Structures are given as structure tokens and as C-alpha cells.
Amino acid sequence: MPLLIKNGEIVTADARYRADILAEGETITRIGVNLEAPAGAEVIDAAGKLVFPGFIDPHVHVYLPFMATFAKDTHATASRAALIGGTTTFIEMCCPSRNDDALEGYELWKSKAEGQSACDYTFHMSVTKFDENTEAQLRQIVADGITSFKVFLSYKNFFGVEDGELYQTLMLARELGVIVTAHCENAELVSRLQGQLLSEGKTGPEWHEKSRPEEVEAEGTNRFATFLETTGARGYVVHLSCEKALRMALAAKERGVDLTVESVIPHFLLDKTYAERPGVEGAKHVMSPPLRDKRNQKALWDALASGMIDTVGTDHCPFDVAQKELGRDNFTQIPNGIPAIEDRVNLLYTYGVSRGRLDIHRFVDAASTKAAKLFGLFPRKGTIAVGSDADLVVFDPTYRGTISAATHHVNNDYSGFEGFEIDGRPVVVTVRGQVAVRDGQFVGDPARGQLLRRTPTGVRAPAPAEPVA
Ligand code: URP
Ligand code: ZN
Ligand code: ZN
Ligand code: ZN
Image (cartoon, rainbow, N blue to C red; front, side):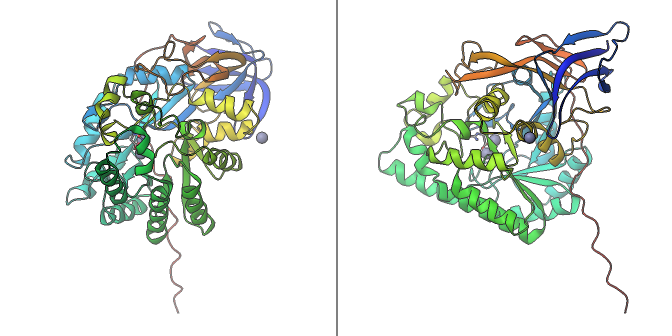
């Protein structure tokens, strides 16, 4: 059925105007003033509403075996929650452990998602070891349309890679034009600090931040940037949390390193006092890199506003209260992660745009367009244009509400953002021309989501040939 969205105010990363949008089939076929509804079309009146391109979450975990347990969501629950919150595409971290082959892992993650997601999705392929089979397998995965890698410089002996493996990954990525995303913390220092704190009887969640201090993240960020500089690969720092690490990333950008930066919504709004709450209340807010001292939040907001931080993701990673209790007597065993897939857009709009910290176009760019461009989805995703997928978010900026586990849709029994007010939310969300959300409820096709196969965005022009003497 054709879909006509009338009278809305379209807001993209670089434009704002009033027009109607017609979607026929899966794509936008016309944008104009006073468009006629074709026979049989569904008409949505968006008067008084903003119309954004579908938002893209560049960093989520859905299926995740991690820290002796599994993250709580399925692709069904995560994709519905994403859509209710305005996210129409997510990029999931495919994370085999060091004991598994890349290709086995990739096939497993694909099988978990296939036919189970209501929104579109793709993967960042984690390289968690680099042995004699890895290169050929990664070439196969890239040929299947997965054109971004992920490395962990943390989580020693589980997901983490050694420097030599990082080098091999970056050299291959450079050749293939693949961008490499990286969790930047110094694994050795984290492990030493954890051991020291535990030996002093410091076992509660309030010690988590002390075991991975800002300088440990700054070192990882600087090391990653140095490896990019040396190999000429393109990189993307995930979940950058603090000013010290930001300085390293900005210094690298300034000297021309091809580095982009993501921060995630928890680090903009939650500080380390949340994780210092006693017992499981603190554990609910344990993630890595940790929630930081509040003074870092201003640095993140300023860098986001100026475009020095490129994208905002979630690092969505839900573990329930019982799972968080696994670390009751030892903070190093608290499963790391905070759920946020449903709340990212509303929180970023509220505490960014509505409260005057963030230009509305930078908001769209950081939450959608920039990720589409970096990860090979643009202009199919990330904008409102004729020919683009009709992934649209009709957003009511006058809505007022409060985030709560009592009303959220993520498969988890707590919210990291319990009690946070929101100014605005999506009222209608479409996935490739089909309505998926109405008035905060999922009404779509639970299996509509497709795996988005991509082409590499970073293939460089060959170096000019040496002039013949
Ligand atoms: O605490 C976190 N971030 N959990 C998910 C795994 C990761 O490091 O992204
Ligand atoms: Zn991470
Ligand atoms: Zn993550
Ligand atoms: Zn603007």
C-alpha cells in the first residue's frame, strides 16, 4: 500500500522544510507540497510533527555470550524496542570468542537474526584472533557485504586481540577498504588493576571505574590511532567516554589520521555515582568503559555539538538483575552493559536538542546520517530523499513522558535511565514504507527486517604511478 505523510516538517542533517512524502513500495518516490494521495494510499497527517530519517544505531549487542552468561534480548525484542524508539536500522557487533573461528561466528550471528528482526540490521565483524585461517575467512565475510570490522583492545583472553593481531587486521582492512571499529582500553592494565583492588578486599561495583581509569582508555585510544597512522587504515573508536581519551582522538584527527569517534548515550547522561550505589543498584550501571566523573559530560556534549564526536550509539547490552547479581561479591564478574536501544533517540533529542545543547541537524547527523555514510548505507539509509528507503520517523516534540522499566519494551527488568524525563517521542515509524510503530506501540511485521549487505566505503584511489624518467 502506498503511504503518504502529509504536512510534516522534514528535518535531515542539512535541511529543514515543510513537504509531503510519498512512499511506494519500499522507497520514497516523491517529496513535494500538496501531493495527491494515490488510490488506496494510507495517509498520515504529520501536522505539528517533525519528520526525521530513520535513526541508525551503530553499536548494539543482541545475541552476546559474555561474562559467563548471555545478553537478554532476542532480535525480536531488540528490534521492536529499537523501532518504538525511532531506530530503524542497527549495527550489531558479531562477537565470536577467541576460541571460535570468524566464519563460524558470522554464520551463527546471521542465523540468530534471520527472519527474527522487525527492523533492518547489519553487523560489525569482530576479529578476536588472527590465525592462519582468519584472513581467508574475513575476505569471505567482506564479500558477503559485511564491510566493517571490530577489535577489542580490552577483555584479555576473551575478545581481546594482541598488538600483532591488531596490525594484521588493520593491514587487511586497509587493502579491502574496510573500516575498523575499536573498543579502546589497555587490557593488561585493567587486569592488573582489577587484581590489585580485589586483593585489597575492594569487591563492590564502586571499584569498577577505578579498575579502568581514564588514562587506561586514553592509552587504548592513542595506541589505536598510532596503529591507524602507521598502517593507513580507517578507524572508528567506539563508546569513547572521557576527556582524556577524547584529547587523544582529537590530536590524531588533527594530524590527519583517518579516525572517527562514537560516544554512547549512557556516557552523556549517567555518571559514575550511579555505579557507586550499593549492591545490585550499582551493578545495573556497570559497563565498559565505565560511567565517568560528571565533568566529562560537558566535554562530550561540546565535542558532539562541534562534530568532533561523530556519532552517538547505545552499546545496548541488557543483562537483568539476576545476571548482575553474578558479580555480587566481585565487581569483575558483573556482566558489563546497560540497555539503551529504545531510549537513545528520545534522550539525545531531549537533553541535546530540546535543552539547547545540540543543533537539530547535528542531532540527525550523529544519530543517523553519519553512521550511514561511514558504514556504507548512505543514501539508501540516513536521509530523506527520492530513491532512499522509506524509513521515516514522525516525531511529536510536544509529547512529555518518563522512562521506566514498567513501560519499556526491551527484554530487561530494569532501565538504566529510570525516571529520566523525555521531551518528545516518535508517533509513527516506518520500515521501508510499511508502518511499524503507531502511538508508541509496535504494529508492524515482526520479520520485516533485512540483513543490509554493504560495499566497502574506504577503497582509496591507487597511488599515482612514478613518473617514467
Ligand atoms: O559494557 C559493555 N560495553 N558491554 C558490551 C561489550 C562492549 O564492550 O561493548
Ligand atoms: Zn566495548
Ligand atoms: Zn559494545
Ligand atoms: Zn543547523
